[in-house]
Amino acid sequence: MDYKNAGVDVEAGYKSVELMKKYVEGTMRPEVLGGIGGFSGAFSMEGFCGMEKPILLSGTDGVGTKLKIAFLMDKHDTVGIDCVAMCINDVVCAGGEPLFFLDYIACGKNYPEKIAEIVKGVAEGCRQAGAALVGGETAEHPGLMPEEEYDLAGFAVGIAEQKDLITGQEIREGDALIGIASSGVHSNGFSLIRKVFPMTKEGLDTYYEELGTTLGEALMTPTKIYVKALKAIKQAGVKVKGCSHITGGGFYENIPRMLPEGIMARVDTDSYDVPAIFKLLQKAGGIDDKMMYNTYNMGLGMILAVDASEVEKTMNAIRRAGEIPYVIGSCESCAGTEKGVILYSGSSVG
Image (cartoon, rainbow, N blue to C red; front, side, top):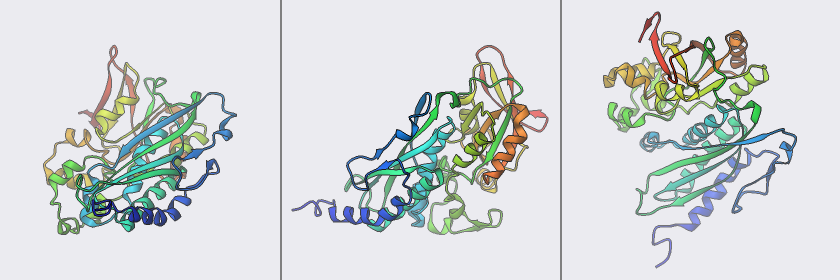
């Protein structure tokens, strides 16, 4: 008896590392010390010594059951982007500059080429975010999970000056709300999606005229990474007072997280076009509006609060970064320590 017969192929692990090296190397920053394969990732902070009050920011997350779609489609080169985005977007919406990222892949069986495809996506996400992929772990778990399946999670670290942190505490009545378009469903709500649509290869390969693509391709569109947009806004001299990454919990859970007590966010759901994938999902599943806005990003992956006088400057900065912005509402005072979100359509409160 040996380890391979017990289900763990050490040689496959070595091959995975060799195959992924070229992708990892493409994410390096000057601050990274050492090469690939050490017991830990080293990142020099010397270049940040001139900061007044540096604050480290961190975020961790996974891809969730979106991976089930990847398994069915045998498509593994973009879920890594999702993983990076879910972690990095949390860091940047607090005002941080992403520094480095680590990933964790647990699999039933190590197929080196598949692992390399996953890491290729992680590396691409890091490249988009300007973060170094300084390390990771691939764990083979025979008997714990099916051989063809895996789970993917990650951890990100960023840095910000304390004075540049986006806390939401400066949001006041009259501040404008700006939404930045998402790329689709991103990485939340797939447990509901898998109940609505048939989870078969044939079902995912079905072409929908309103989507302009197959269902599977629409669902697998990688999560948008908003680093460049937030950086462009900062470079334009705009003070972002509050920022919400619209993930699980949709509008109703995430927007209030950026609000101080005594402030309500009023969002006009007619202020932008909801992408076709959400309309198709809602119709096919008979899902009511509140559940949709309480589960999905509904076409807006990031929502910002800025002073009303800086709306145009903010919109232009977002466009220069290659993203699509919308003015979606405003902030208003409310009684006592309340805070929350009101969704309405046009002039009627919802």
